[in-house]
Amino acid sequence: MSRVSRRVNGRLLSRFLLAALLAVPGTTTAQAPASAVATATDASTAAIEANFRALAAFGPRVTGSAANEQARTFLESQLRSLGYQTQRQAFAYPRFDDLGSDVKIGSETLRGTALRDSVGGTVTAPLVRIPGVGSQGSYRGLTVAGKIAVVRQGSIPLLEKARVAREAGAVGLIIVNTEDRDLRGTLGGVETLPVLTVRASLDTLLKPGLDATLNVRVRNGDVVGENLIAFKGTTPPTVLIGAHLDSVKGAPGANDNLSGTLAVVELARRVVNTPLSAQAYFVLFDGEEDGLLGSRDFVKTHAALLPGLKGMLNLDMVGVDAAPLRATGHPALVAYARPLPGVTAVEGSEGGSDHVPFEGAGVPTLSFHRGLDANYHQPGDTVLDPALVREVTDIAQAVSEGLIRPAN
Image 1 (spheres, rainbow, N blue to C red):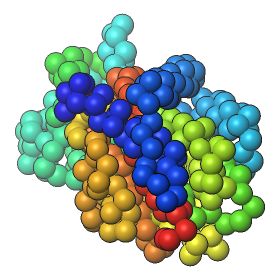
Image 2: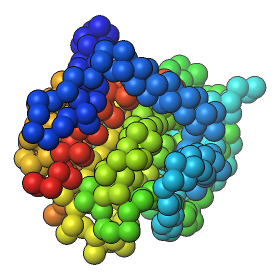
Image 3: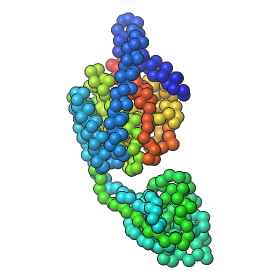
Image 4: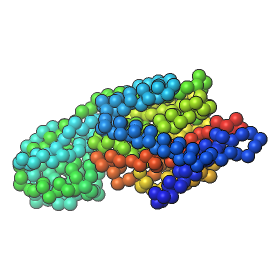
């Protein structure tokens, strides 16, 4: 969609929301003046942009990190200043962390990524290139004992690559990704060989015969995450609007997921003096990137609230126009979103974000998403469009206000 079309849709939806607020029972719906729509739209976009700049300065918000806590404290203060009560919900879980792994060749240090389940260790030895993907037959005729093997990603499981290299006598293994991005994931089991993955662009630097020092620095231990919950009412919520605040290591997380976080906070700001504020929970989940852990803990801890929820709205990656905005979920919620401009609402279920535990517990959900952009989980995830965030805030507000109407 063009920027002009997005601007028109945004103004239409803002007009729709203001008109709804100005509607008088028994009369025709009042039309908000164009100047009022423009002023409200501009103020909303400016508020989102200001928060984005402040939060982006903290850096990647990995669960358990100082930046994660700084971002949560900043937003908690803002929500409290609006008159909301806040509550923190802490939960602990075991996590594998790469503390900064690399391979040194001469004066060059090549950054790599350790796989979950990998053992730590430092070894210095010559490199040996293994043809293909490192299957059993790839090692025939090669002298591997006491060397660091270099193989390509693909075809066989990562754990098998490590096992075959160890059995051939290698003291370390470097796996070269087929793409020029970090290869993140799990080795798939315990292996005693230090294993490091590197980007495709580093392949030509790993020449056979060169002496290299492989440094795999890892930590296994418990991490504490914290969900942030904001509310005004003293009664159980009717609707919950949520987004995850955490990001992955090395990724500033502008689109994933400051975009959704900013939309939740902006919605809370807008409706602070309306009936919605007394019937809603605004939740910033932690630990999403480690397996939806914050939302899973919320569902377990707040089981008594779930039967009273008419809907859970989840906003994840909504600030970059990688694809047209979709709202996927329960038919009852889709019915509210479908007439609104700027969104394609479809019935169904999709995984990968914090609505999933709620859906599994029987709560109607609606998940907002603009697709995976090129900087997904990458250091380049540094930008978002405040106008797109404001647009999804408009839509989430319209759906939420529909859900709390007395007839429902």
